Length: 187
Ligand SMILES: Cc1cc2nc3c(=O)[nH]c(=O)nc-3n(C[C@H](O)[C@H](O)[C@H](O)COP(=O)(O)O)c2cc1C
Image (cartoon, rainbow, N blue to C red; front, top):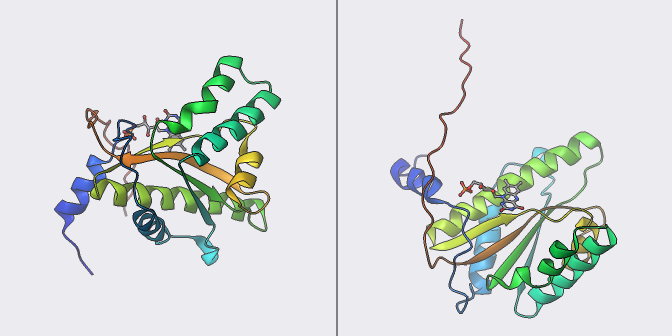
């Protein structure tokens, strides 16, 4: 199998962490479904299909903010961050939560997390190709359990990220990247 390498390379390089989106134009659920389906083509060891997705729009974003804020407060987080969390998920019209289910051993759980990260990258690249910006946000400390429950994920699901999603309004500057560090071993 071969594809147009120039097109693929362009999308890989064009993906940027970007929250400057059109706040008035939500991404349709049909497209969110398409992105999640493309995410599932990521490799996953033992075919555990470990990723879970939750699409959050409208007032759901504020409910997510409250869930995270309460969990952060219970965890003793900085009060300014706790307050900010109440509204921060309303900055983009769509939020996607990606989770990774626990495996039957620590090793499998780690592999599931790796696979979910690969799925997340698939999703972000597919979004970039459609003019949709993404921003990978970490799930705040102490709120994984509450977010997993909010998202309807299985108990013990690790939250790989809470992704801000929307049609790109302003493109980000492209940073230079350090050259890859490659150890070459032969013969
Ligand atoms: C696992 C993971 C967690 C991340 N969490 C955050 C975060 O909480 N806040 C944030 O600003 N960026 C977060 N990022 C995004 C990085 O900051 C971003 O990828 C980096 O600045 C490089 O920019 P680029 O994605 O445009 O190349 C995260 C990225 C990864 C892979």
